[in-house]
Amino acid sequence: MCEAAAYILKDGKEELLLSDVDLIEPDGENLRLVSIFGEQKIVKASIQSLNLVNHKVILVEK
Image (cartoon, rainbow, N blue to C red; front, side):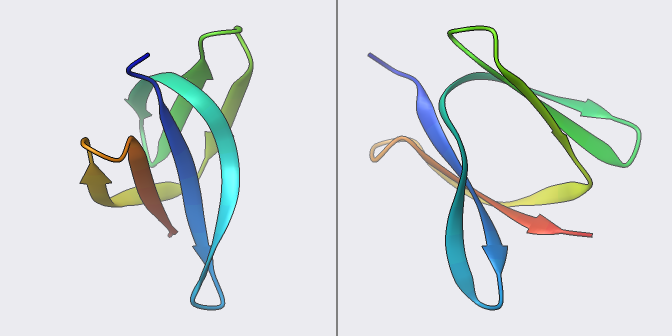
């Protein structure tokens, strides 16, 4: 599987936001994340890094 886990940095620590992320779309100042199961999260954040080999997305709150 090629889905990623999305983490958000809080107090310098990575906190799992959503697993099995299939889609990340910009929505104004927000990002909309959608998992392969249809679960959605909308966060006011930006992407800090993408590690495609390890299937990991790191987000930073705005």
